[in-house]
Image 1 (cartoon, rainbow, N blue to C red):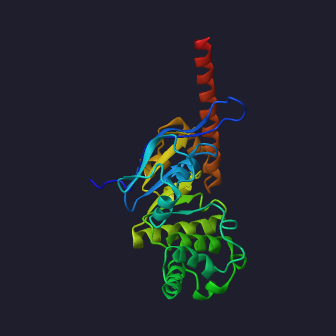
Image 2: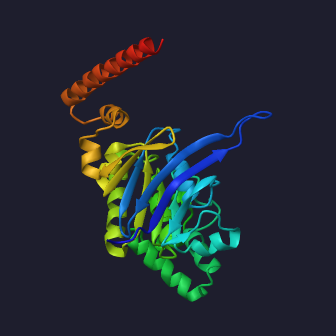
Image 3: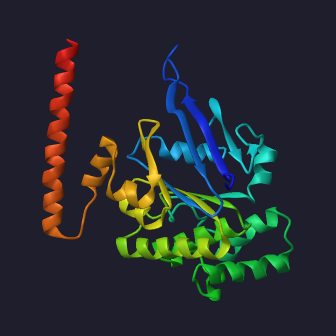
Length: 288
């Protein structure tokens, strides 16, 4: 079997509590997850579930309190700044907001050249690479001289994807990369992610709250609830026939384009929530 490219084992992330002698707040509770080379694993959950924290921990942006994170067989849980910088050519990120993730005072060429220059790529070679990157993400070559404000949201996210691809990484952490875009633009950007993966073999950790998005792009899906993975499996199975009650709630909360089916789903969700509430009341009564 192929060894995982990213292997998260029993990961714990805690932040200091607020107030004197307050206990630390545990965001991730012994979370395990792995990603194979060239694979997309969708990590889905509501706001506050801990999914973004897991991505940040893989990037070295969140403290690892316990457990471990392995990349290509090497423990990267507690790298120093120099070691993390050296790893940046292997692991990159695409953030949620294309409006704030790009420096508004820099041209697109400057934005895309910056990581190449830091990596020691010569100026002429960097400019050639910028042209290749713009072609990969479907932007015209004359985009190099323009500022981010001259582009739409979808185009800015394409620039962000090009920046992430600049050093030819093996893994990209995608943190809600389409949630700030309209539906038609979302579809085009998701197709771009898939096309790039087929061409380059890059792996994705795709963090989102939207089951429809992970269904479109993911090979496997993990569902996170209150800092724990509650369900993992094949992308089609988890997003169409979920087994865990929390995943079922997410499924029934997802909108569908057909008004009749949408009403059926809303009715089913109301019944499901009522049944859950009744079961919880019965458990509380038994405990009393």
